[in-house]
Structure formats: C-alpha cells, structure tokens
Image 1 (cartoon, rainbow, N blue to C red):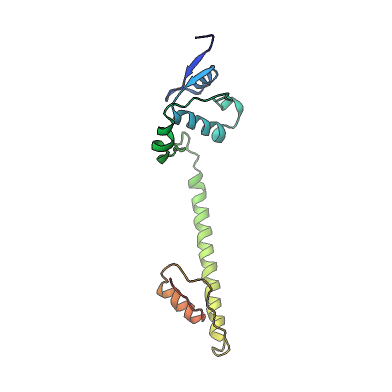
Image 2: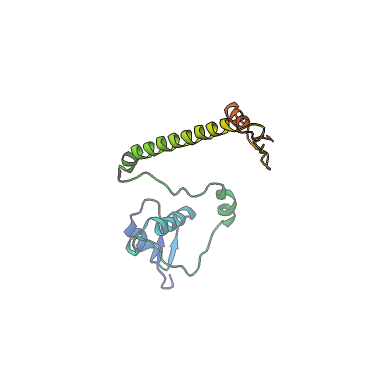
Length: 157
C-alpha cells in the first residue's frame, strides 16, 4: 500500500523472521511482544546480529489506556526457562555454604569475646548506652539479655 512494506510480530516467531518483520516500514505487534523484544535486545543479546529490533521513527499505540492502566498492574516477566544448564549452582553452593559457616563462626567468636571483655569491666565504671532511635522490631529475649549484659538500653516502638 503506497509502496510501504508491512510486518507483524507474533509470539512464536524465530529471531530471523522477527528481524525481517521489524525491518518493514510498518510493524504491527502487541505491547508485550515489543516489550519482550526490547528487553532481549538490550539485556541478553551480546552482539548486534542477535538483536531483532531497529530504530523507530514513530509509534502508534492503539488502546493506550488499556496498556497504561489495565496492564500496568502486570509488569513484563523477563525471565523464562533456561535453555542450557550451566551447573553454576552446583559448583558454587558448597563454597557459599562454607563461607556462611566461617562467617557464623567469626561472628560467634567476636560476640563471645565482647561478652568476656564486658564481664571483666567494673559495672559501676561502665557507661550505659541508649540508642537515639527506637527499635522498630520486637527484640528477642536473647538479644535483650545480651543488651542488658552490655548495658545497652533498648527502646521498642
């Protein structure tokens, strides 16, 4: 029509077909298809050849109220099933578990050393500390006991 080429983006098209459709003068498609292609082109495509979209001069959006109001409650989902398993989880899980164990041991050691140091202090000469901001969560009995030993007064909201 008037020498213009027309393309249409549909859900299950291969990237080569999508690229051909985007190369047309006019390209029809849904909000989600344009959105997903944009996200793929700008997030997952590592080379220009992997991208399907091209630059635009104009956009005509039909039923913009539906897109901006009704569908705005449901954002585009940018994840999907992995096509190739990289086994990265299996590789890193034991190392991360080991790191967490070491961090826990370090924190426990530092806390017990702090309690030992405070036990050696003269309670009459030890200053009392009260945080300026009240604590916005319920304080567990263990934390309350440690705070009392460290002479920290906790104020709950």
